[in-house]
Image (cartoon, rainbow, N blue to C red; front, top):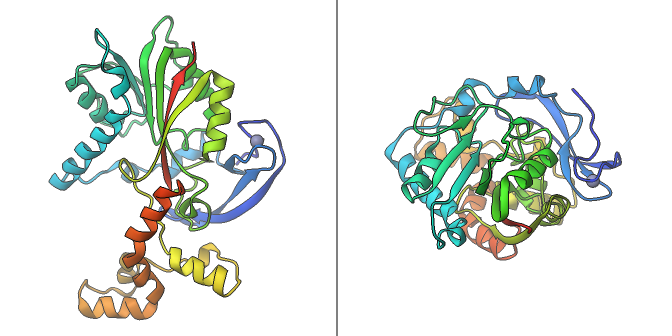
Length: 322
Ligand SMILES: [Zn+2]
């Protein structure tokens, strides 16, 4: 483990916002999420080093369900992602895209079908080999691009995973043509899901951004923020147990900690070895009535959050300054 200063402003002063374990793979290992006192950046500190982080990405992390509904979901997601690049599609000639964290290459392939020349960056060995376009298999900030430039660089749910986001912003500024776009999606540290409800995927997520901290990164690296889309079109981050959190903190005046998060219905079934069905649903409702009401309220809560720009996910479109 290593203790780090703020990646955005260099300050070593921060306060602890919450503690939570790796809820997916190592439930006994707890991590502190801190917030920089000077600039507001959120990050895991202390954190696993670049060597130690490997263990938190087991092979099963990369396994997606190859079903038909998954394909439909991917197509909807890629369309939403592609809409951010529309402003560049009107001009003459072919546009060049670099997709950082391209996984199996499906998003660049989607863009190639729209007439883009595409390349990708992917460091995970678990991804399938890509043969139909060039893929750099190195950390983005370490790649020697020479004179290579792109009309757009995209990074979908990448920056929250890396050890040095500033190096990624700097590299993007080097390789995006002047007037080109850097488009990226990150979780939103201003959302209840990220800040209070323990929905972050710690310690795979190491950094937690807000509109303000994103703007500061862009200012320091030569980009101007052009558009922010706060919402669930590309990725979702449901405000899980928002009601339970409100009841506990607002009505009862108590702290809400990780151990106060109720089991999901799936975890509940696994723990008591129950099969899905009416009796199991009733047992779960008796175990956590707020969770059941909470699920019914999600559409309303999420809509309110999106309107107030406090939903858990934000996509940013930034323009490289001339
Ligand atoms: Zn800072």
